[in-house]
Amino acid sequence: MSQAFRYTAEYVLDKSYFEECYQQSVNPNPSPKRFIKTAVFALIGLAILMLDTISSAAMSTKETYYLGYFFIGLAVVEFLSIRFNKTWWLWRQMMSKAAGEHVNLTIDDKGINSQSLHVNQQILWTDIYRITETDSGLLIKLEKTTTYLSKRCLDKSVIDFIIEKQ
Image (cartoon, rainbow, N blue to C red):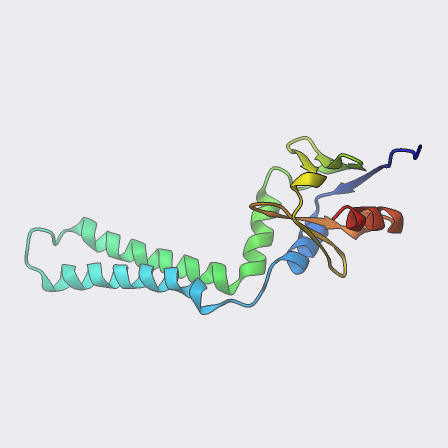
């Protein structure tokens, strides 16, 4: 009878960890599709301003004027979120309540369990569709999401065990 596998480790959700997650899991090439929402917001804002300018109807009020600039402002914010995607993503992660937390990682025959003060995530081996090994970690593809697991807290035997479970 073989002995049950169990591995535990602890890591911190700090800026270097989040930066590694971004580099290994996010595709940095902005496709033209990502700019569609920006263009739509800008066009709506310009259309409202143009209608406000050329219309002598009762709809021409201060509120519609502000609404037009509001949509243009949304377009600018959306453009900046695309242009500075990494910085934007890292800032959001560092502002989250999970930032700076210690995470207890347990890998056993059931699956992968991550526990911290704010998060308790259990990934069963049966829920995993695909495991992709990157230079610095493992991308674990689930039904609707992808999770990243850094190699910095794993040894070779654990990495082999996880890949074998695929």
